[in-house]
Length: 353
Image 1 (spheres, rainbow, N blue to C red):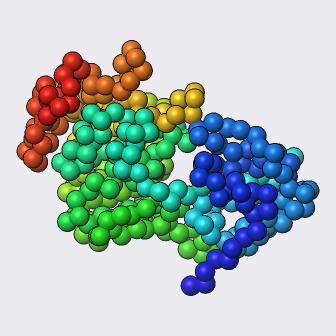
Image 2: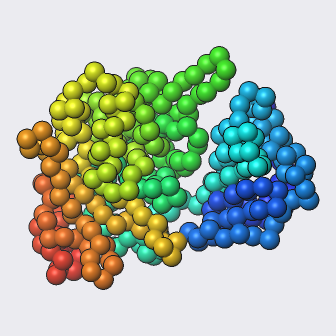
Image 3: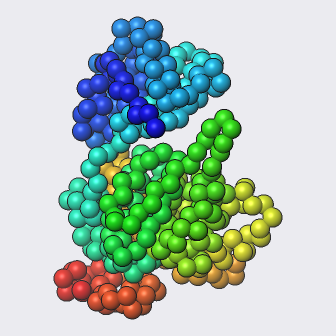
């Protein structure tokens, strides 16, 4: 396989090299924005003219073996691992555009995220125990909330004696596990291998857990079936603005791809397969945080039952709600020493543990 060549990014080079920039957005040759510490900022960077900007776009497409004569929108990966999206006129009539989501080399531990005020010690401790106890976790959030980065952090705590198969459209997960198989979907002119195809194949690879970078189509149902047939402790992400919306979003994805499956059955699969939904949010100051951890407790009158274990308190801090989750018995059976007092907001972690 021929290695991709290094590209000349021109005025974007320094932005892509900066650790403080997470996304670079070129609206036109003379309008370049970045996401800096969670906030969008216009930079002084610009190309010499429209021609120089177009040269970069066509270089990216050619290097990634994309035929720009056969479309107006393209997604792919730069040689450095960054994800890109390109649009061409007439889809964006005034100018071609280029959006680059940078590939983070660093993989954060849960304790790293505590120091970054992403979550509290108590939440990190709970999630670490949940992973070790093979609870199934769905990470929910809007665009740019850090879902994939957080998925990386969670996956670091999967025990080394388990086999993991992960599935993504573009490689963003950074396996740090001795027995991790990474699969990428394939989209070519004469050959497609979708996320659903990957999931079907993954089940033949003897995985203990399956990690899907993002559920965005009919593969959501296959993921649920895999979880319910011996692959507990699997993980995925979903685009949604709240934990409850995440459940509705999963229902919609499955219904659109499998219209013949009764809603009651879909909900029963979700209720039996998913243990926790972790909701992420990017605050107005750019800070990314966990704002809610919800437990799925079963079904009642064809409705999925759920309760919040953690949520934002009046001081704007993530804290336990006082609800003692049903999954505590599973965690205790797996070796966790937590007691019900752990979930009392008035009791510190050290006293409860």
